[in-house]
Image 1 (cartoon, rainbow, N blue to C red):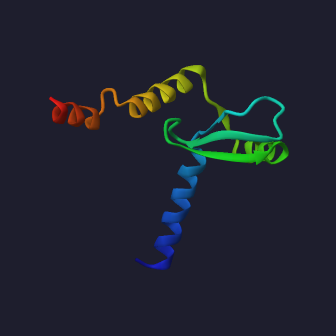
Image 2: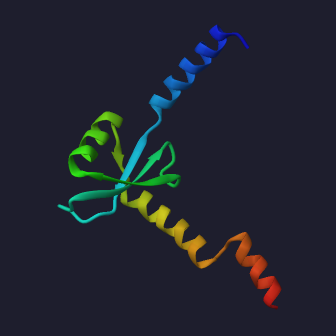
Length: 101
């Protein structure tokens, strides 16, 4: 692949990346010195956990044009996490049940 083709592909990827919705979910208490939050791009259920001072968090949110997760999105993420944490309706849970029977 030639450099010009790579540059075009990179520009197309950047354009589509910029169009993806960036989500945050604050997990720390209001007024805490550091803001603990989840950050997701495109899919609220696929996130990283981050920690920043309040001012840096505000700048981060403005710079990334974030959207706060809705209550429904947070509930869906929590349900998925509980499913994996407690082993309900997962492949591993079915495998575990099979070995104990």
